[in-house]
Every structure is written in structure tokens, then in C-alpha cells.
Length: 239
Image (cartoon, rainbow, N blue to C red; front, side, top):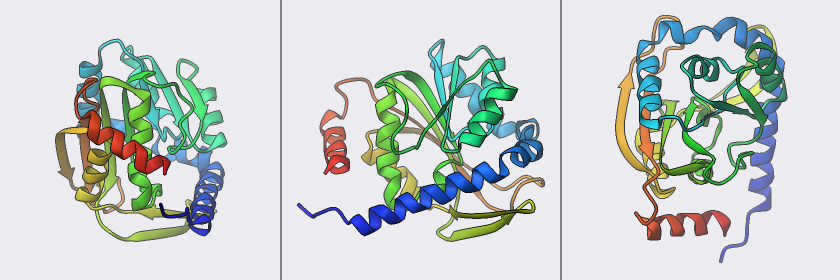
């Protein structure tokens, strides 16, 4: 067994701290700028509506929820939603604006949720702050908090580059945006034990950054399905 690389682990922890501090800095401006973004994103709304239809009455997690606007959209449609974000300032902003949503502060690699707590989850552009090597551990954690048969909708920017942002809407920040190839994300989801049901790519809308976007709709198989493969994936994460 290869010994853990403590220097790499420390580097990743530092990355997450930079993300947390950057989003704390822009939390209020973020909501002011994109709090109503779903009004101009018909494909996103359609995918979210499909997720709701597949889920029924089970609670849904919004992972990397930011100030909670997507969670609030789901709550308006009768969904019981829990928003999770790394940034305490984002969580505070969500609690002030959307009291109908429960918010929790936490990391995608260690979600503040019980095993099988949710019937579905969304992770819209939250994995863009994860290195490729962190994707499979994060998806394994997402699978943990989903019930058997539960759906997960993941969205991300397509590419292979890393962009570091130091000025964001006039705020000084220090955060990396990781673009991911579709097969990198799809492969990590398979390794984490998910089954892919649909994928969609689209160009940016006029109000968005000029990137190609991808959506993957996957589900956690029912108990007893692909158990051996999932056990291997979990073992690799814990090693």
C-alpha cells in the first residue's frame, strides 16, 4: 500500500480554504448578480424539473448551493431541500433569504448528512473547484448520502484548463476554476458506483461566461446492483 502523500493532502486542504475564503468575500455580490439566473436558463430548469419528478416526495440536497437560489427554486415546487456549501457566508446569506430551506456548512469530500438521507442531489458547477483526483472521492461521498435509486445531477464547464481568479466583481479573491473533460467526470461517477442515465452539452447563454457546459444525470443503483464495483471504489477512497 502506498503511503498517503501528506504534502499533496495539505495542498488540497489549502485549495479548499482558498475557495472558502473567496466565496465568503463575494457572497452578497454573488446573490445580487446571479440570484435569479434560473429565469434565463430553460435547460437547467427542465433538468431540475425532471429530477424532481424522478424523486417524488424524498428530500433533495443542493451540494455547493451558494446563496441558495437553486434550492429555493426547488422548494417553491414543494420539494424538501437541504443546501450545503463550503462557505459560511454563503450559508448565512441563504438562511436570511430563504427560511424555507435548511442550510448546512460543509465540504463535498465530507458531507454533513446521514447515509441515505436524500432521494436526490444536485451539484451545479460545484465540482469545478475540485481537482480531477478529488472527483471520485467526492462522488463516492455523494453516493453515500443518497438512497438506493436516488438521482444526482452534475453540471460543469468542459475543458482541461485551470483558471485562477484574483479579482471577482471588484473583490480580491484567490480561487481556481477547474474545467473537466466529460469522460473524466463520467468515469469518476462510474468508479463511485453511479449509473449514467443521460448527458447533455450546451453552449453558454449570452449572460454567462463563454464556456461549453455539460450535465450528467446519474443514479445510485438499487441495493445489490454493482455492489462489488462500489465496494472496490470505497476501498480505494479509504486507503
